[in-house]
Structure formats: C-alpha cells, structure tokens
Image (cartoon, rainbow, N blue to C red):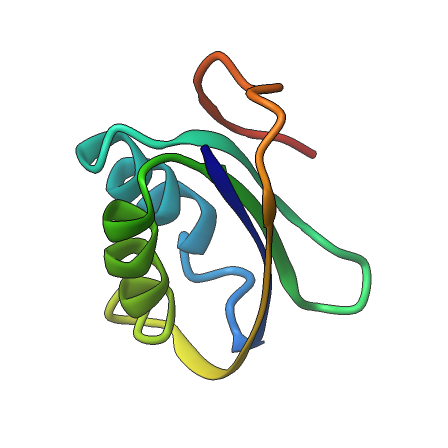
Length: 90
C-alpha cells in the first residue's frame, strides 16, 4: 500500500488545518499522522489506496477555508502499514 509524506507550507497553523486534515483522511479511510512543525509547516504521513491519496493531496493544496496553502512537498514511498488509524499529534 502506498504512503505519501507531505510538507505543507503557507498559512497552515492556527487555522484548524490539522483538524480538517484529520476529518478528510477519515472520510477517505486513510491512516497516518498530521502535526505542526516548529518552522510553521504542517507535516503529514498518509497511507491508503493511491486514488484516495491523490484526492487527499488535491485537498491539501487547498486546505480549510481559513488556510492559504503556498506549497505542498510530496514524497511518495512504499507504505509499511505502520498506522492503525489517522491521528493528530504534537
């Protein structure tokens, strides 16, 4: 199962980006983690079917209404099924 590792930059902290990302991942039945980085970016690991990950990435380019996404760095890799669910972490 594929995994995508994303770094999302722009106005993505303080706008409930992680909460909305969590909701979208659950909607798409993806597993993984989302968390804020000290440099202002959001980092995401997500595993699931490729077509669902593509939809997820498309959403991450927009984010929630209050966000202003400037860049999404996308790194595809082979998933290790290391996640049982999708969680917001610190």
